[in-house]
Image (tube, rainbow, N blue to C red; front, side, top):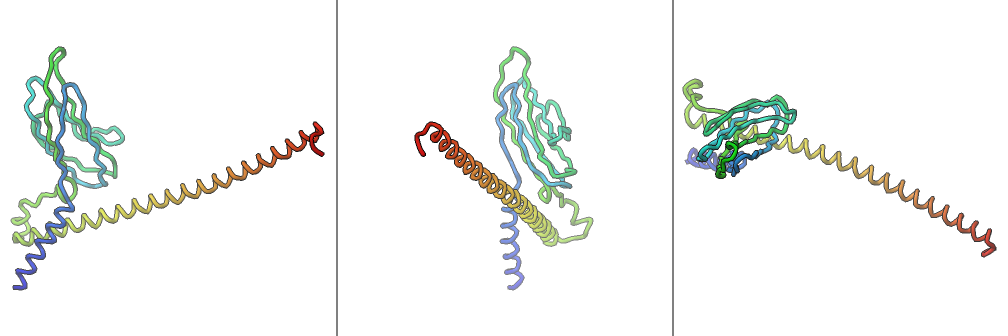
Length: 211
């Protein structure tokens, strides 16, 4: 009885974490002679796997390219139809995945539909063959998946906390600068108002309008 309850609890936890660690699947519309790009922010030392599938478009050729923020090309394939790609990230960066459609000059074309599925981190890890190599039972493999997902979630929370601290520091620094700038502006306005009063008083005295 206790084993059944534990297994049920395990299923619930696995389902919750599965919902948290999702796979990104996107659908794009690619007009003829156009370029459509997606940007993804990924941490360093992470395996990224992408799977794409394009709809039919007679006479239309489509290329795919993956680049980082420095312009380095990580993946480049021409005249694609269906396939996969994979790469490892060396550092935290924003990666750009672009589809480029081409049509011969003077020919019209139809909009091509593309489906892109991205997996990275634990999502991209393959557990096939782990049962034979590690002599693990199916339940032990599922527990290993659960442990890996939990570690990934803890790392994500730690990264989010770090970013939150950085943003808080930036906000505090900005608020301090705004405060100093406001004080400086008030001092300038007070000095200008005092100068105007003294100047007008001297002017009116010179014109003998006041004593």
